Image 1 (tube, chains in turn red, green):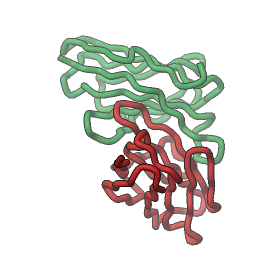
Image 2: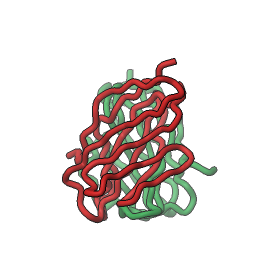
Image 3: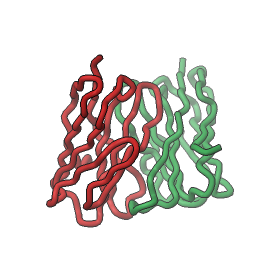
Length: 110
Length: 117
């Protein structure tokens, strides 16, 4: 069962920041939040993950609330190539796989 | 190569035939996963390997599906007597280890697209 809730779709203007929310209110203390995206006809691409602290890499930033019940993935300057389905996933400690929910379909508009 | 490699990238087969799909994980990754994704749908977990062992095969859709891994490297997913509902992209992924801690990020290949006609 999915442990995350995401909006089914979002639009973002090209060049603007895309903020993708995710609720994971039942997350446990030793569970990580992972974000992947899947561009049409490609395999899922790892973006970022975090436990408690905010994280940033060359692709995105991950903001996790203090109570860890929600997080936001931020693409600082969205481009048309960022159009994809974005998956927020809670990785259960010791779990043997990632459970992909339905994700958020982000459309970047010119 | 640097990433997870899958072959064939595309396969069209006749109903009733057997198919084999191959996955080469990232070098050094002990964990390997297989997923299925039907057109327009989400990812469906099939099976994972820790080393050459598959502790849980309950995700395989039917007994027509089997998978093996050798040398803690290459894995093969075999579908016997293919049916039209088997048409999907089959995604392979790998990670350093199974548990969800840091450093165990799962990386995916580009998939093998299977069409059963």
